[in-house]
Image (cartoon, rainbow, N blue to C red; front, top):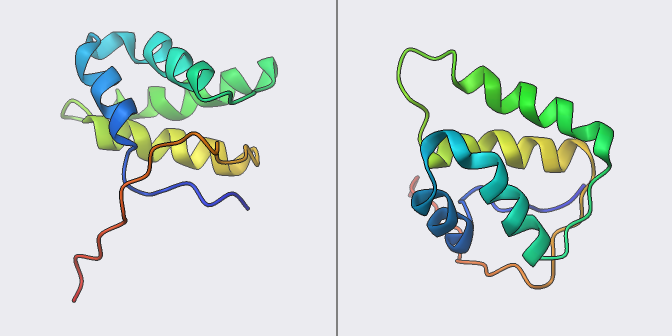
Length: 95
């Protein structure tokens, strides 16, 4: 199982913050391409479903909410973590 971080990578956060709320998909695709991530085309429907479920919430999902759904999708499809992924150390808030 790939070890994707629970905290959104900061370059993806910046990309999503710069994009319109509804334009998360092209922003994610651009980010994934810049890190050399490879996906199968038929996986996209599952990603759209997972992230689309967030839009049914009563409140607007945040960037970290979208990342949680994307991360879940990446892990489910065994997408390896890119060597080029800028990582911040995970913080443990339960001390």
